[in-house]
Length: 357
Image (cartoon, rainbow, N blue to C red):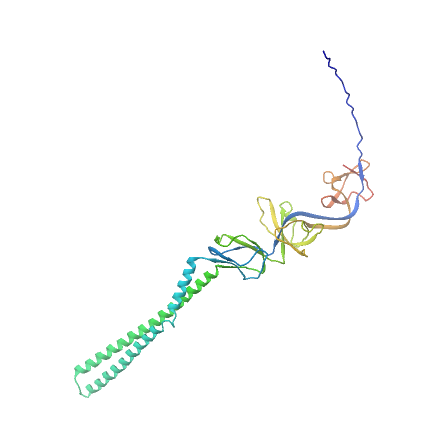
């Protein structure tokens, strides 16, 4: 039978004395800034929408193409609008005054005939009246001549009214048909989707043959030379941001380089979801090549000083206390701070040694 052997191994307890690091304040420059991140946007970048519903008949550009303001990007087609245009054109042609010259000539001829008959019956009537006054002829003849004259005069005025009404009606019809044609042409022009600006077609989101509506984005067009930096600033920092402040920008596509920009716009409405404000800035001197929607990081410079007394931020206790090498706790007055250092305005000198916690 085997016996169990209990082996007791003593624990060795080691102790070591931690070494406290001592440091001295340094004299250097410091910049206080607000961190931000965001996306590069082309200036005047916008989504292209149709103003009418229809089917994409032609796409006249490709992604990356340079376009001028007014250049046609898409052509839409709609059968109803095509028929309306043809109908408006036919009405305009039918109502044209030249096309109705036959009606006008006929009305003028009838008016001229009525006028001549009225003149002739007038002469006969007054001649018969003079004879009657000289006791020549019968009263029946006089009355017949007078009746003929009155009838001819009525016929003339009736022909004149019809003639004038015809001219007014033809003028009105021609005017209305031309306006309807102009409206139809305007609607037809809406089926040609044009660029609002000089720029580049950055994206095309629809294909030939697809049905689109005024709510359907078709493409993205933007300025090819000028860009905007859209930064998201935390609500905690937004009151520190002012127009004209310097922004130091770094881009992943330009490793090791920094670019300067200036704050140009502060959008006053906070994004409730992210608790941030949209702040725009523009490059002082932009990189040689940029593309929209590329990401960047930035620091909005609030203040900057040269040759000031600095200590590491982790040496500061309770926002205003430091521990000297001799163990004394000293209250200091602080100034600017960045992510690593903080300015000391009073309470320390460059010769003091501090214990680093």
